[in-house]
Amino acid sequence: MALENIAEIEKAFGLEEGKFNEMFSSEEKHSIDLSLLLIEPKSIYEERIANIKTNSATMAKEVSIKEIKKALGLEFEGKNETVLIEALKSKFETIKTEVIKDPEQRFTTLKADFDKLQGNLIAKETEFETFKTNIENQSTLNEIKNDFTKHIPDNVLVSKSTIFTEAKEKGFSFEKENGKTVVKQNGEVLKDDKTLSPIGIDSWVKEFVIPYLKTVEGGSGKKDENTQGKAGSFEAFQKEAEKNDWDATKFNAEMSKRIKEGSLSM
View 1 (cartoon, rainbow, N blue to C red):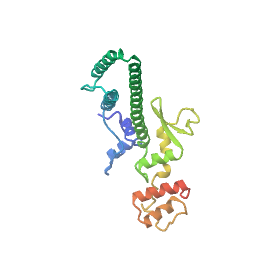
View 2 (view 1 turned 90 degrees about the horizontal axis):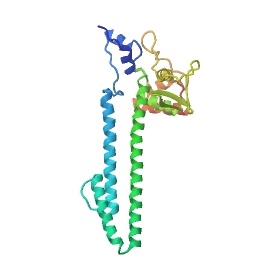
View 3 (view 1 turned 180 degrees about the vertical axis):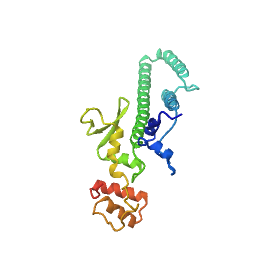
View 4 (view 1 turned 90 degrees about the vertical axis):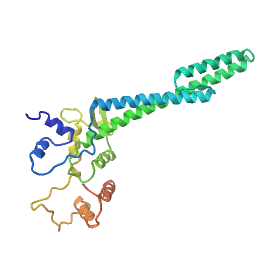
């Protein structure tokens, strides 16, 4: 029985349409780069995010109670709201008893304690909301980067992460809108000229990545060793890298530097 969703699997692994069948039926060895993919059931991912939020809320609450305890000089054991409320009741009863002796001073003290308590609670709520937002933003960023890199073929000259960084440095940005990743330039969503719909991230990446693809070698399977390449061209840059025996790190760094300077044309 044939596998019905091959196209969906190819898309998930960033393969071109028909590539899976081609590799499967080939006598040569092939491999799929899984280093940039996180494969797990969606239910596990959602459960992990929910637990992170729950644990973060509990931690923020316990820290707040501890700071309130210290700020108001309260004495009690535990980190929950119940013991905090009981301690506050006890303190207020003491204050109420002493207020008869010096009403004005006790009122001033009570108001100062209340203001401090209110300020601490507001600060902690703000801190927790910021923390939660950061987690959600990081999760969205990871999804966007995965949407971008899974459409980059394996025959590229630099790492897929480097190409993602280059796209952003050239003024493009990527955001989630209605559950889909869209490409923006100068704050505007790039759209298809005919349909006026946002350009798909898959087709945009395939166009953007062309300058980073390895040059297809000709007839004999080898490049002409006598070809020096035009100054400032990628062919000349490759020759220079081979001559100086640059490793991948040096190659990528020097290429990025020259592209920014404008001394290297892709």
